[in-house]
Length: 400
Image 1 (cartoon, rainbow, N blue to C red):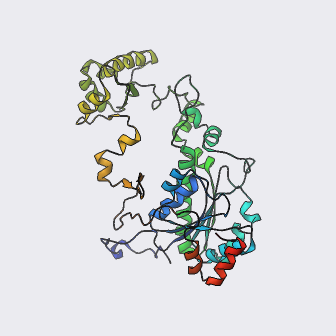
Image 2 (image 1 turned 30 degrees about the horizontal axis):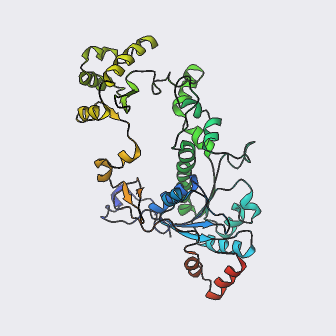
Image 3 (image 1 turned 135 degrees about the vertical axis):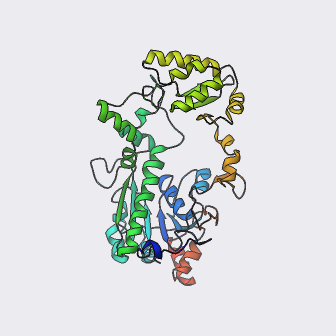
């Protein structure tokens, strides 16, 4: 099904409808990925209406921790397939003929050795968008190297920019390389190729490297390299703590206040709340020594009260100064409730909703993350396999 029609003149464009349906409805995605970057990528597609089939092997499958698996595989269907068996490969080939997108996250060459590389599958379906999501890409000296989020952040110079002065780079529980460099870059490349495939009838092999994606977004460190020949160490840049107007301060209770008053008007308002209008002229002090003096004075004032006290005092003051919350506190904010960003999960717990809002579309939680192979039977039947053929495939261990 085509998701893009030929361009029309602005005057001929139809008016938006109250309900136009999910923007990726009719798009079928075969998801062979595991763990985090790939599954989050395909969940975004599923949340926007695509039919995503999560294909796992008949052994370990996707070995992500159960709580993570439940959060990044909703709205998908589950199929278990052994691609090392000819019968299992044949099932994938049949599914590919009716698919729009395939996303895989194996090391370079693995899918080709299984008989499921881009060239082989594109021969069956020329409009297929085939996404290979790896750490270092399909080419280059590091293409076969193993890696995780911290490795990619290290190689790209990003980890060195995260942390405090004189301390080792900080570790984050938000894997920025996996999600920014991998997930979001893959979504971007995939949708661009899918858009073109609907116009041209020809798919593409989309080569996404997590390290490339992260490096491409290191904009501010790169600006420093261009302007001064090297990055600024943590704590010495405008956004890493050099300025007292853009820093973290500790309240009396041990909580932290985020002061992000980069613009003078915000700093002036904040100083009034501190009861120190005399500090307004110290928005961006000329020297590091002066910055430290102002920082110490602001810290002394903030440290005299609790975070709750400051949060209440600043609640109606639009000066870009806010509390640093824990996630469980953020989930309780009325703002995110009003945005519909926090949803209950079947069996308990909560999950985060699709962050994309658009006219004519309302995010729908169609079903929770599938158990491994939960929909194997139904998917095989829909693909035209008879009951006897399905039983034979199971007896061979080609599916589960």
